[in-house]
Length: 110
Length: 111
Image (tube, rainbow over all chains, first blue to last red):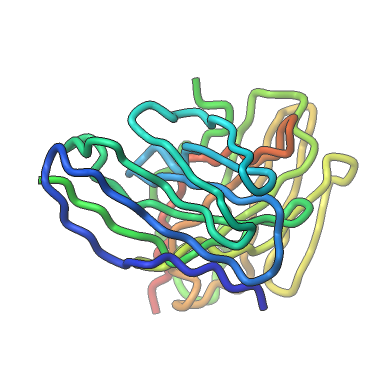
């Protein structure tokens, strides 16, 4: 079974803080993704990576950056957290058509 | 511009009956479609998929139908069980191997 692990289930951060969300997968997948899930909007792609050190913007990259120094780890960075970044963040790794998701991180920015 | 839409935010069904979840898309270049199921406080899990060259795919109680001319797909669950209560997302694969997700439908199966 593919395992995708996100470092935190719940986070509360203050406006303006720098926030790191970590994701690790154990199946040597090259493709990794960060989504955010908001009611009625489904899952929206923030950033993705095809390989180590490679990163591509998704549909809503503003206010975010990413880091992929090792194949198994893909980090999402909020440079200066804002209240509109309060959301559920989901990391995924993918092989062929199927994406495997982590359990999600519920981030609240106050 | 939402290219994948699930127009029903919620659906309530009696246990044992059929659940039908619908999904519409606008991009004719989508070539592969998937359904994911999500429980609260968990990540989505893959349920079933269908290639654009097929019109039906079945896996146990779950069947996905694709109508390419109408740009519509549906997920049928028969018989529905209380454990099926979750949010269901449809997703479509586009160029660059990206997945575009719909807004989700919350299914409630009543005992």
